[in-house]
Image (tube, rainbow, N blue to C red; front, side, top):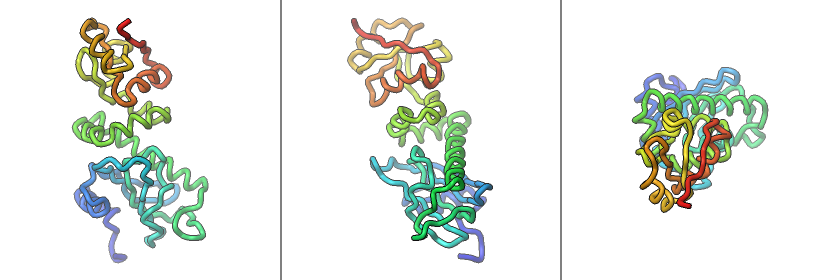
Length: 235
């Protein structure tokens, strides 16, 4: 309709989520409002309630001055934002000759960066103020999030402190581990963890690094977060 605001620009959160359910085929985990003043781009990023298939391309719906450009724009969001789908209207981006995407330009890069900033802010807000929402988010997207922290330092600094790990002293986040113990020890496999955990002292817990990406994440902590780590072994 052109006689009222589009549903993806609604102020009411429930209305936004209901529209997101139509877009995704399932109710989104949440809706992140977007407003990029520099390019007059407004809309919403829906947090997927399911993990996208490996290698799946983003499929964002974008309007140019309320006229549909495409429902499959895949270069509007940062590559790491694989867990959201955006529905946007813009007047400040230039379409390509085919009018199926947008010209790569400083304006597009600015828009991409601002969308990324909004999504990162949402992640931090959930981790700090709504841990139950963040746990649902991690439950769906934890493997993909862990993989992204291995190649994106900025994303890693945002996400790693909130990632839970299994330790010989119980489950805790990486941030809690660093705060309580000043560093970490980890094993490279589940078998090593079981052997070391049996004799580990409470004041020096050991992290189970046998899960997917976990040992690689632990090795990155000194570089990314300045947390000292050592490898524990049975030898």
